[in-house]
Amino acid sequence: MKTKLVLLLLPIALVGFLVSGFISTEDYPETKRTLASEDGCVFMTTMGEQSSEGFSVYKTNENVQLSVRDGLSWLAEAQLPNGGFGAGSHAGQYVRDPHAVPADPATTAIAAQAFLRSGITLKKGNYANHLKKAISYLLETVENSPKTDQYITDVRGTQIQRKLG
Image 1: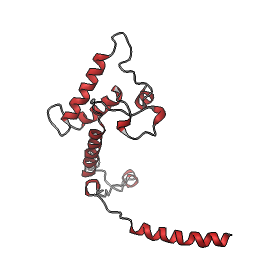
Image 2: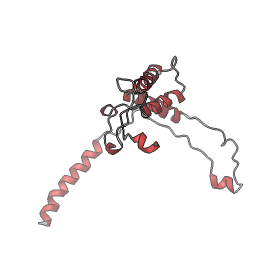
Image 3: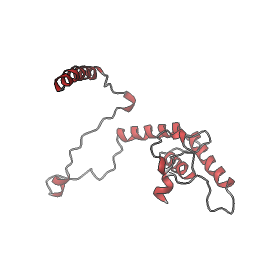
Image 4: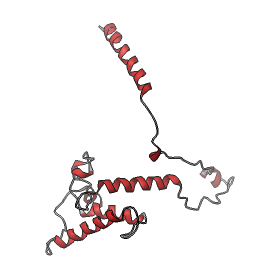
């Protein structure tokens, strides 16, 4: 029985190995990252063998800018039609589709903050319209909440509420 099983699985494994060699592993130019090598060594600097001159300067390299660009692009696609953003419930973290969850003010505020911190304003930047829609959602949510209620939304148990309180 073991011999039959080995004789059956051996060709399947061989075919799988050959097929995996033909699968394309091409890089996409829009996500290609190039890491510049750094010559600095913490140990050598601590021991006085190497200077730390120039390493105290904050370096915004091309890879960081590409990551910011990709992140803002994802945020723009994740924005809901009402202008809000949703992260889903803490109990349902398996839901990865940003459009499958309701918008909530906390997640929307964090997303709007990301747009603002990247230099986008209400009047300039590639995502100025997205920022306007997010702020409009926040203002409408606050204005439409009952004046006597301590909450501005009925959405409860979101990831950000659980993590930040």
